[in-house]
Amino acid sequence: MPELPEVETVRRGLTERALNREIAHVQVLHPRVIRNHPGNSKDFVSYLIGNKFTTVKRRGKFLWIPFEDKALVIHLGMSGQCLMVDQASPSGKHQRARFRFKDGAEDLIFVDQRTFGGMQIVDLVTDIHGELVPLAVTNIALDPLDKRFDLTVFSKALRARDTEIKRALLNQKLISGIGNIYADEALWMAKIHPQTHTQDITATQARKLLLAVTDILTQAIKVGGTTFDGMYLKVNGESGKYAPSLEVYGQKGQKCSRCTNLIQKVRFMNRYSHLCLNCQKAPRR
DNA sequence: TCATACACCTGAAAGC
DNA sequence: TGCTTTCAGGTGTATG
Ligand SMILES: [Zn+2]
Image (cartoon, rainbow, N blue to C red; front, side, top):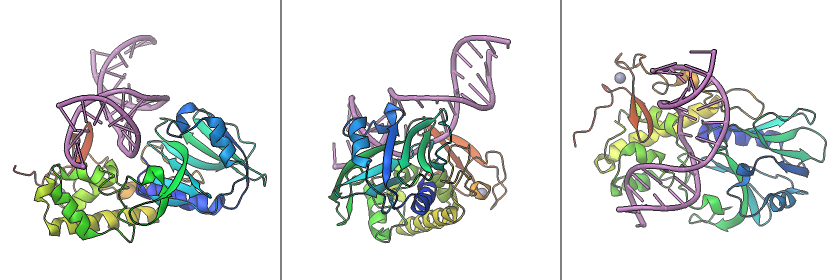
């Protein structure tokens, strides 16, 4: 499932292989891929033709390619893949969009089995940090790898909230880029139970948690992210290599590497949390 | 404004 | 065997 490290890996792949190539044509092959685009597919396609990607940006799990006044925003959702393929390669069952370039080299295809991903072309606007970002990105927080991400702001924001810490980690308006896998991994590393109330998170714990988050995300990026169920692939079609480093996610019944207790998988927020109940003590309240 | 629940979607796997 | 249920979960929207 694409979270920050996977999206960053895709960003780097596109930067390597799709920059400065004039777009000759774009095919929208499934209506849901542009469901958040403020316009129709004809409008989407005509804006892109003749343009070139000059850079690929990312905040949290959102990617965007800025043009003059608007940007192409890409979100991978649950199962989205950006792949570079030969022009002659056939369109697979889950191909949702295809970009053809004037140079006649590889096409960029967007493949997405579960269709939670999508693309849109929206206005670039100045956000509260003074940065020019697409409209769709203005309402999410900075991600923890952004140099401007501030521990004190984050720590205070946590205590101002009335919720549980894992819900806060998954709330893209508080901190962006984290999904279920890395939330569980970071909480385990920081030895914090996912249901700890945000108002009970001390400044020290907030610091420890943020360090865990940045450390894990950085390590995951180094190996191209986590391919867990084949839903995520790099731009070149290869898998990410972080899965063997996972300590709790998908490790139900395995021994915790710190204390040898068994890793549990428990219902949480209409999904699951993976944790070591010995290292991550349940809150009392 | 904030917290929460739910819809959206597909196909593999598990259950009966 | 075959039909039904469960599971994976990020985002946008509705509700209180
Ligand atoms: Zn443990």
